[in-house]
Image (tube, rainbow over all chains, first blue to last red; front, side, top):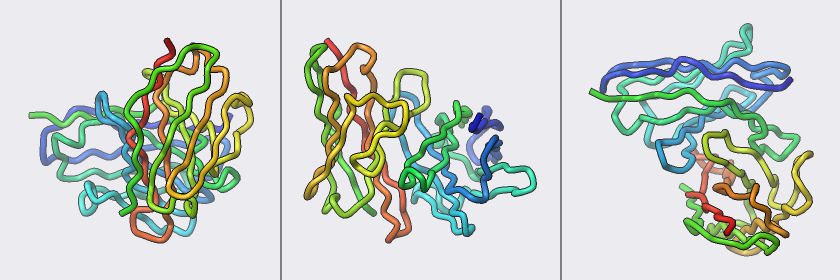
Length: 119
Length: 109
């Protein structure tokens, strides 16, 4: 079954770091446009970052300079390194595949991993 | 960066038609997708490239776009359609290629 499974979330204090992982099954991360999307409690979806098939990366202004998206092709896994975390980074973080078969619609989503930033 | 706007909420009776708008400057030139999100669940792609349905999505779901508005339509609304609907735009020309609208909460009365 084509799926992604996120992990690595947790409770951290402001200023600390966390690395999220997204393990993919039945498709190749390096051949896809992979995204991180977050959702704060009771709020809408906020795009965080994307890594293209060619390795190019983009970030939302709210995380640029603090978060880094990457992938390990040998593990078929996507990562999000989050540094200098802020209270406003508290959210459920989803990993999602944007598939060029559906015009880069995000057709595979994980269940998400929760990040809580609090003192 | 590109901005898309959605009405926060709407209510529709079962069997009627629900129409969701997604507004953005010259959105007709952009790639637009729609997602359905039910409580405590991940979003599900229901319309891609403004008008196409992924496999498994009922024919009651349709989409269109024109000018500055993309539209998602649900015909013959059912109670199971109660959810939040988000539009999303790909803007590959800039440094923020992915933009989500704020979402519209559909209540089925």
